[in-house]
Length: 315
Image (cartoon, rainbow, N blue to C red):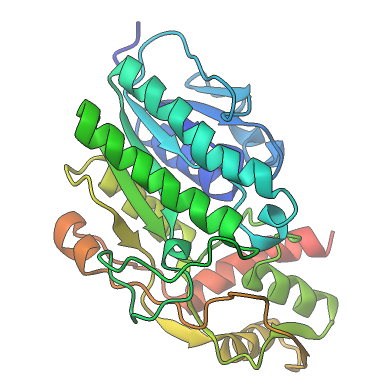
């Protein structure tokens, strides 16, 4: 039996999950990536398949999860994360947040492993508090079209805290704000891949509403650093991880057009129901508890992401 720490990363073939596989392998862990490949892709992890410390298991965590051998940590990142995905498969989204989380908490309890679950800024809904602090309970419509994702994540937090308080399980909860970087899917549906792919194709940029709604974009390497620090911390309550630099969607479109050397030509569409008008994390806890804050500014992060998208779009 190896003395290396062993970690299970669900959603390991996804955008965030694959970057987490890279990070924990670099830190000397044995990594098991688990994914049902509904939204993940083997292309994201193909560079890892020959690594003796890496293992891939194709499995849906909404069904029973069992692993032989020791397990030190679990990162639960399995879930559709973009509206275009979870609106297409709402029941699977609810199941991975509820049944999947229950299965992995049970596995963590059996293995005496620490588990970190990936929650989201969407638990705040269309917030009436700005910026969003962890103590804010949110403004979520449970029966709206986004409810399948928002409420799955809210339930995920609730059952995780129940396992922590009732069973004494070592749990961590991260609330992730808008994140971007290489390995995002072109058809992801979120604003950054949509804008970049449209700009590279010479198309008008799709702007929902009047573009005055705001988002705060965190580069994936910064997010991964925050996840790593939170997992190894001793803090069990939710922590926001995101970049507090806020920008309107219209300004962001202009930024993308300028970056790609095209004229900003917006194509306006109705704002989707319950789409948040404001999104900005308060990262006081992350700074104080984890000593974390984002390091990669948006200009540099977008430059790196553009290079990836150029290869994908222009092939």
